[in-house]
Length: 308
Image (cartoon, rainbow, N blue to C red; front, side, top):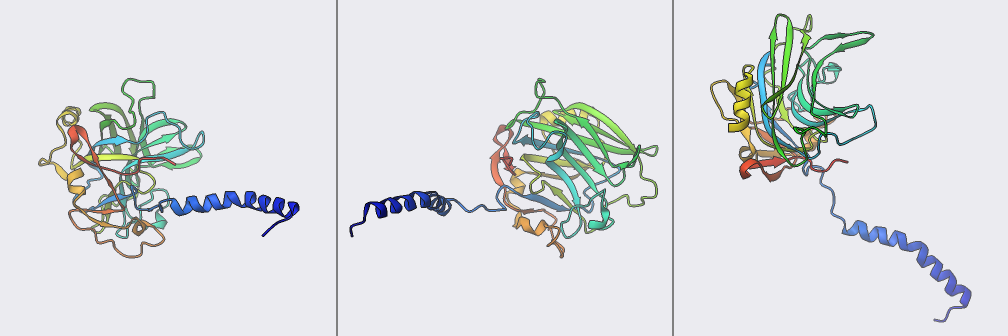
């Protein structure tokens, strides 16, 4: 079929206009569908007998997907980047110390690495803390600053390190001490919350290690103890590894996690979680974790590796 000069010009223009849409559609057809569970997970255990919120220690061998000093979000904002431990109700919803009405009157207890106003910190939050603040609600957190990017002991992406936090209730105050690679980073305290009678986890509560969208890095092993370990013990464990002893309430490592039963990460959605998750005593993974090589090539598990 022959086309006039004007018709040929119109046809060429139409093809040029359609090209971006054709290219986009072809690209979409070739792109891999994003799996919301992939590298976006939480390791859960029944909380009963595994966490003493008034006297204890948590230690972890970990690697971050980012370096201390990397900037995320807008200036002055805060962000949770490595959610090591959090407490949840039986349906999987995380307890909130500031808004307990969302998940019921359970006991909030969180340990995590995060960033606030462009600095990296280690945090512990708890429903048991009540530090007065002028013209503000009581603070329910204790924190310690971590080494800046230009310091020799700063953490770099992909490196393996140890962290630990101890806590104990003494003389009406909660004292929390923070460690990185066996060295004390800081110590803080907060008065015990008056009138708050809950001092232990409920029988059907859950402990979570990692949380969707708030866990950028990997874990090789974790140990929770029923007492506050000493500086010397934490330094020794940082070198020798985390082994189970008479004070251990919970210990797991990458090898055991890779054998756990799995579920979908969507089951942790607060709007959908209406039923008990029925987590077995040996733990369960919600979402998908990637196998990784830890220290000395020991098995480890990787959560999210790329920050949006």
